[in-house]
Image (cartoon, rainbow, N blue to C red; front, side, top):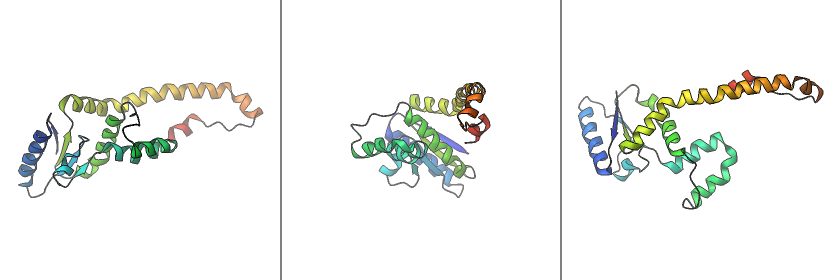
Length: 172
């Protein structure tokens, strides 16, 4: 079972997590804990668990998706105060961290420490609507590419272009 924990104060979040961990440990197995607050709460009290840290998540996730952003990541690591944040990146990366962690917690109890409630609600809404949002965004782009490719069919042969089919774009 997955337990979500959100509190405005760090101390309250840690106290709730400790109480829940003790209660769940009575069943014989200590729960897995994921800290999505971005503040390293678990690390601050030397408690085992996974912690979401924005700088680590940026380098681990975005670098895989967009390798051309390597210079920006180096700036973030060297001088984080100078590098502007990408809009919405923290929430998106928190969703990636949660999705990556869920299979581990599926067989046992798991606790997710969420940011304060107003931020936690936005994060959970993003997790709920994200796939539909991507579908709404990609389908019009794929339709546009299908139409453009049909219009360029004669040029494709003439210029010996190898334009990918829509299905190739979906599987890539």
